[in-house]
Length: 80
Image (tube, rainbow, N blue to C red; front, side, top):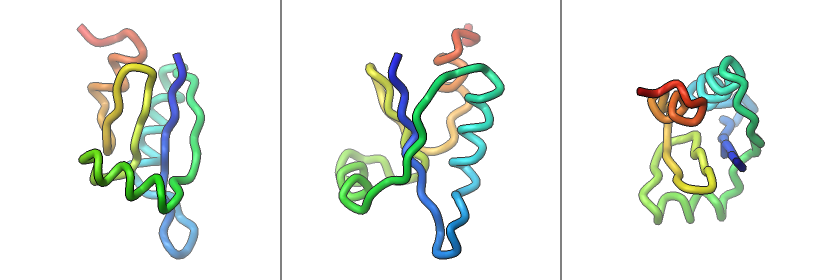
C-alpha cells in the first residue's frame, strides 16, 4: 500500500508536532510511508478538500488530516 504523509514546518524550519507524532506512531508499527513537505499548491488543494490540519495522510483508499491514532492502527492491522 502506498502511504504519503504531507507535513508542514514553521518559519524556523521545525516540523509540526502532530506531523512528528504521526510519523513516530507509524514507525513504531512498522508502517512504510513517504514523508514530504507540503507545497503551497498542495496545501490549498487539501484545504478545498476539507483537510484543514497537518499532517495530511493519503493512502490508496482514503485520506485524513491531523494526528489520528485510530487510523494508524487500522493501517497496521491492529484495529478491532
